[in-house]
Length: 187
Image 1 (cartoon, rainbow, N blue to C red):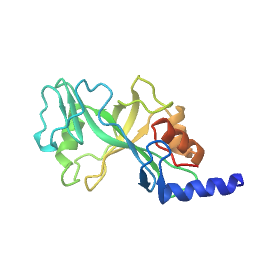
Image 2: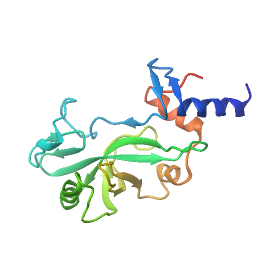
Image 3: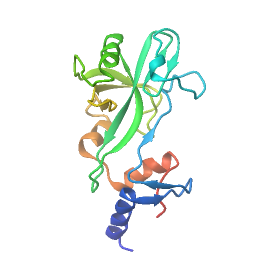
Image 4: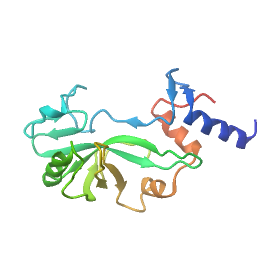
């Protein structure tokens, strides 16, 4: 099969139904990846309901995290365009917010009416394949309407992830990322 036909075939599979070469499960559409919690989360993989949020001690829900009553985080999406695909690849990850911006986010969470649409600033708190190691990376945090998770942009325009967010990645690069996390289509 020619390189072009192979790429087209992979693109078609990533946007349709495809079987994972690692886990052997069927996936539909472009798979987004997600981190369960921010890297510094010190507890088991258990979440509480969003409505039970506590601002003291440690708290983790589907959308909010508080560490020691001092660090406030939100689940967000870091998006990367993929050449040849209309849909962006998304990585669900966690970003810090200042207490002030965290309160603003909580205030607008249910109705999407944020008193300040940002962008806010934060620190990306998850390792992302070869892009981000264990040190946090500064990000812009953009709140979204309709209970959609905020989107993130890397602040340092020279960072490889910021460049890929701007210019996009190839399907081969997307498959490398998926494979790194244990999910990639059979070839």
